[in-house]
Image 1 (cartoon, protein in one colour):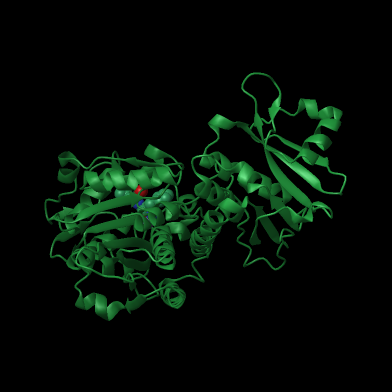
Image 2 (cartoon, helix red, strand yellow):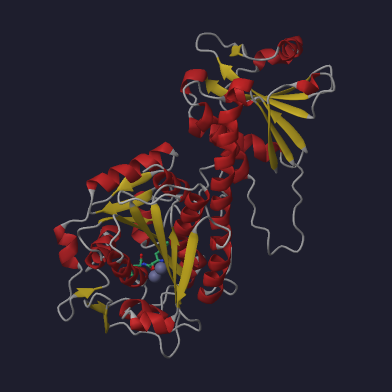
Length: 497
Ligand code: BES
Ligand code: ZN
Ligand code: ZN
């Protein structure tokens, strides 16, 4: 699907295959508000007797023809005053899915869609609706569906063309990164293992701006004394990988901020000896979504040439079972010297993240943000719709919550309190990897992670166990499979500090 920005309706005579215009519901009467429409559109519309039933309610569609053969699709958006960027994104997604296999070209009267106060972000929302909703994971299908829609023309007033170009450029990068994230998460574990995953990221990172990459393997992790990370990998047929990427902005001064992103990259989570029941094990290929989320945001931030220095650390392994796999009751030593009693080998994400967070702290950044499909408890507390946020810094909490709000993703802060910290202490080691009960499991996992972060550094932990997939409530996300959620929030955060 290719996007083109056009400043005139020069094809008026020949007409177009399809033109989409917005229609707004009137506050007072049952009539619709079509005051922005071209006169020829109004005439053709009003001629149709059934047009009186079209109110312009959100999601309502009315098709009609112009004399020049153009099909016009009037898309209801509800009352103009209640239209939001998310409504534009969702309605663009819905209409895109409708026409995707029916038309090859479409013209969008984008200036008419735009919210008065926010032209650029309105254009971005519509483009995002198209690009995110048309995503399909068909790599492994022998017969792939052919998408008919090839060209989307965004018709803008000439005064808006610069802003539209900027919105298009940025949206293409962001959506490509969200879809890249989805591809990674959807890839099955027999294809995406720790070694192939690290190679794939290394290769992709070559396309980015001012990015360096190094990949640490088992020997280097041993040198780093990452006893927790290595204990998770003990039962694996593949070597562990720590992918370390750095992005340097064009200009670096003493004031340049340094943000480190950390991601849980479990290419598959069987639970280990604390084996998951088969129903819960299904889909555990998605347990690397934290790593693909932070990498995709890092990727977008680099392509958008953000002004901050960004490091991205991906802790990659699977959690499998063989005769060498770590047994419950084992005690291991973390990179920072703390000892940990492993009561449940299924609480493995925190073991990988803990060592990578300690490595991140040694880089002495201003901020560390990790993302992980860390706890089933997050689904219980916040559902599939909400990302959990836990942090040691109110300022960072506010920035991340604000970023999420700006891009219409749901994020909710959960507390880390002393009783949770206490529950993660063991009698025979410094810590245990599981609390005394599953209650409050999301926050208790964060209380565990906190032990591996330098308290002087602002740190936030994002639990994406719910939001990583199955976003059936969002028309621009696949209802099954990877969502790519939170890539937009993190990209916004990285490009607006
Ligand atoms: N990867 C899972 C978390 C998960 C579970 C994400 C279900 C999405 C859906 C994680 O490694 C895990 O198994 N956590 C355990 C921790 C428990 C043993 C303390 C959990 O949540 O049950
Ligand atoms: Zn697990
Ligand atoms: Zn896991």
